[in-house]
Length: 220
Image 1 (spheres, rainbow, N blue to C red):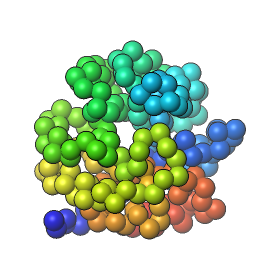
Image 2: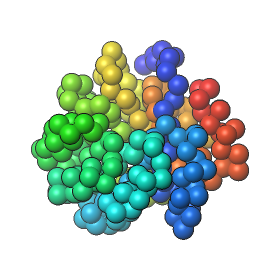
Image 3: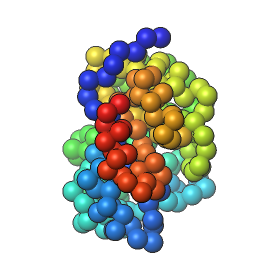
Image 4: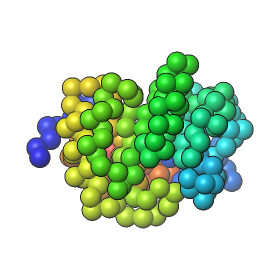
């Protein structure tokens, strides 16, 4: 499948899960010049075993930065938590498509309150489902590794899935983000496949020279 070069610069949705959590404010201020938005994973302990970021912490982060805050909410009952994160200052809310009909309750609620709303797809979820999302969401997140696990390499299916989703979303304003397995060697592959944005963690958070990494990413 041929993908034409993308005109807009790569969107960098920087994952604070990879920041120094004991010095979170310091890292936010250090990374802020290089982030288009900050990505905050949150969970309920059921959909994923982790809990990750929670509303009170998001509210504190909101006081530190004016960058958009993107809460990726992994929850079996996402509507129980979505209002708490929105009130804390989330600008974007993303819910796994695998939560079923509940996802649309969150999407419609978030959009009615001025938040951008999107869905994520796990690796085993058919990408063809993206076809039906074109008019309903502002962004789609394709997972390239199992959710809730750090340090995994990019799944061999990820680039083909990005290319397929890119074709379905062609001509829309829906932002296509790749999340998981974001490494120096994988970003060019994901970009060439049609990713409009990535969720970089250690690639930026752990960089000795984040400015140089940022410049390289924006050049892709």
